[in-house]
Length: 155
Image 1 (cartoon, rainbow, N blue to C red):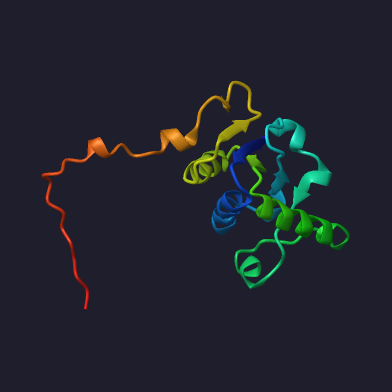
Image 2 (cartoon, rainbow, N blue to C red):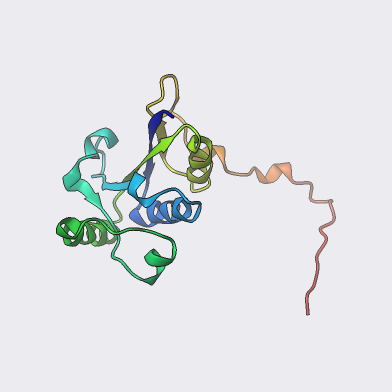
């Protein structure tokens, strides 16, 4: 089984964390998911460094969705970076090390969260110039205003 890395850029740490939570709920191992701060205007590839990696503080929710905390010696620094990144509303790079078996699932989950950019290292596979935010928007003109809407009321 071949290993690939998918990289997604999100506009804020909050949006990135929501996408990461969905990956975790869909059984993507937390050890394969990494989040990095991205300074405004910086190259996403340059942001992928151990000193930029962060992780949210542990809590009941993280335990429920099987989000494993980083090693104890790095935990305080990563949690502080997470808080700082959220407060500054900084963009975030999320990387996922995955197998070819989970590639399509991960792309679908990330696409549901409208990242600014998604890239993979598989040869010939890149969405660097594509914005999922634009691709996934529904065009309201596609809906026929005359079509009746069926509603069910529950008591």
